[in-house]
Structures are given as C-alpha cells and as structure tokens.
Length: 94
Image 1: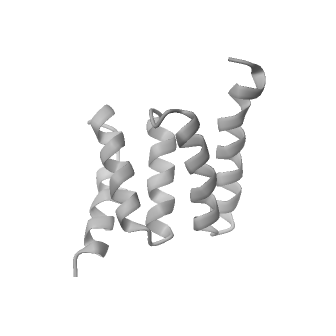
Image 2: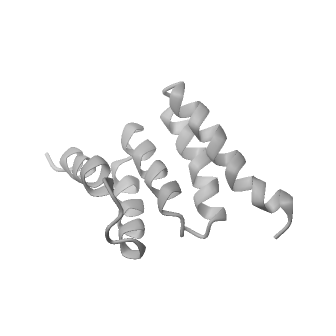
Image 3: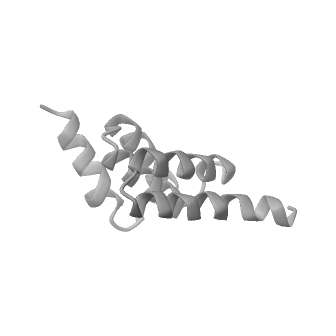
C-alpha cells in the first residue's frame, strides 16, 4: 500500500472527529463511511464510530446494520451493544 492509501482512512477519521465535535453527525458519518469502506468494513473502531454517528443522526437502521457487521467479526467488542445497538433498537421500536 502506498503512503497516500494509508493516509486516506486516517484523513477520513480525522475529518469525522472534527464534524463530530461540531455536532454535525450526518457529515461525520459520511467521513466514517469512507474510512469504513476503505478498510473493507473490517475495522471495529471505525465501525463503532460510524454506527455511533448514524445513531446520533437518527439513522437507526444503518446503525444497527453496522453494529451487526462489527459484532460478527468482533463479538466481544466493548460498548457497541450498550452504546449503540440497544439505543438504536429502542428508537426503532415504538
């Protein structure tokens, strides 16, 4: 992998963090989506941040989908069930 290819997901994540701090969750999710795709949906930390920002952006179904993908690969990944998955399910169910 070239240096530019290695920096791309880091740049996406850094941009996502900035947008997250600005409370612009839809924009943050967009940056994390790019990093998630670039990582072939295999990074637990990026998946967590993506699902968290989907939750904050009220994209509950997308948050649940990403949580499931993370948990399939990392069943013991800390906090994703409590912080994101359970809250997204509560928001979906009336």
